[in-house]
Length: 291
Image (tube, rainbow, N blue to C red; front, side):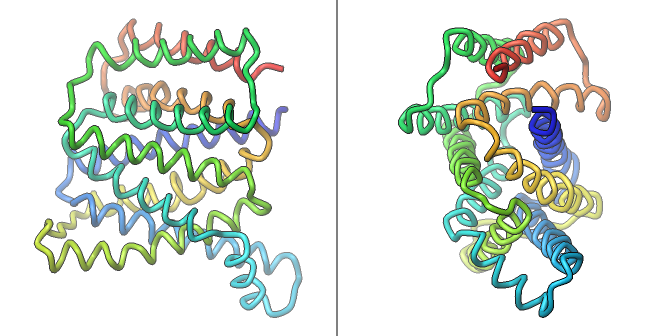
């Protein structure tokens, strides 16, 4: 239980850091969402492959590189790579024209519905106290976000909701993972390969322009290597240990953590509304995950 709680907590902190880094890059620098996504996925893939190679080398096996590529292909899935790519690109483009809070509400609301629906279809059930916890957690999230949230455009809302569904699918796939590091590494490689058609579309179909900014590049690399690469590997380690419904609910803590990070890093106001919503959300989550 302690190991599971530690892994889930570390993953949620990484997810919140991703939201913070993405919003900081797209709002405060000139980097475009396509460039941010490409750098995020590529840097994450490289970092994960290096970690996988080191891990294989420590196992003392011969033909480490051959063994590694075989294991990456056998542990990862094209579907996992596609869902990761869809999440990443939609996440970046949606945040151009909506606030951090509104984006988080749409994203994790969609994740919640996707994972809990699949979990219930597969026979997972909440106990009465867990249902109460779920309602409290979602209510706390609404208290945190809706009063100060600006209404997004229909297109932005659809894009962010698509990101949430894709992330929910990616999380569900992680429950079948035999090796969190190898699965995440392989999925990132597949997702990175999908950046090639993205570059072609942006470059030749006049759907936008690439714009790089030094600070934006740093944010993208930090998001890719640490918050995404390492964070998602940790999440894949935790997923087999919890139910889909539980995994969905604990992710409602991310907007709370992101608000706290915004206060600490960006100097954003930490109001009584945020404190109250955080207590309600975290209290609800504790009811869901308790045995």
